[in-house]
Image (cartoon, rainbow, N blue to C red; front, side, top):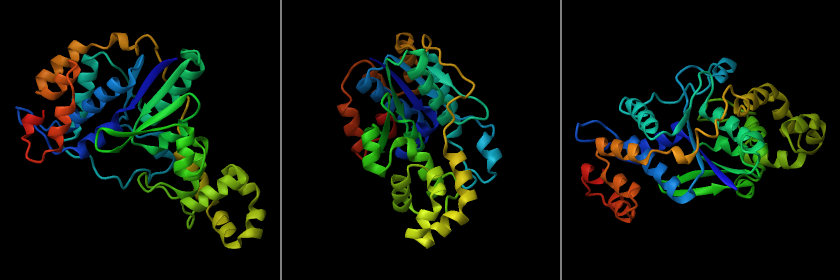
Length: 313
């Protein structure tokens, strides 16, 4: 069984940026997100030992979701000025390390990850591959199945949880494939779209477990009404919002990209190229890790509040 790692670049960059203080390199440039991203990147390589690896990014161009709903993600705070250039730094370093990158106007990284995961399992790698998605975005849990798992940071940069289908059921009370219908009812505050007014997570999970899907819930609205008239009224009044939320929550599985298995092979990973970039940025602890030294001392330093910025790097 081969292993393909799919990294949600934007999600991991944002997590790294907010998890670490505003560390600077010797030129005074803030590089905390770059440092954090590659700290997690090395951990994934160390822990998972993948055969293939791909990083996917969002692009600035509006996505089709914005066309569907003008308020989509409208309330997200503006990206910090010192984070913007770090996205470019990460791109450049990945290219120097010969890591395959995907990004397409009109699509989110989620859609690219969804598309690649399907291609990997159904065709490109003949179903003999385990796909591991790395992201803090719980929307991607809808992709989890017998061949696909998700590694999600829980706290900081090193504490992670692996979601398989059973773990998703334990956490949310529904199957991964039902996540979209669940979000259709509860909405998503972070992406700024409503679901059905008055329906929360427990009620949504209960309805899905009773009827199986959003479509079946609406087909059986009279049965819902017989048990709970108030709930049935909420569903009826929120039908349009639920339909829109379902479209917004669903990850595209046929984005206009094609996985090149050969290019994504870990055998092309340029460790020396990555080392040179770490040297350029002054990432001393990451250099030690990529050289095979223990990361224990690095983790101890991160916990020490008195540490100097460049000492951490």
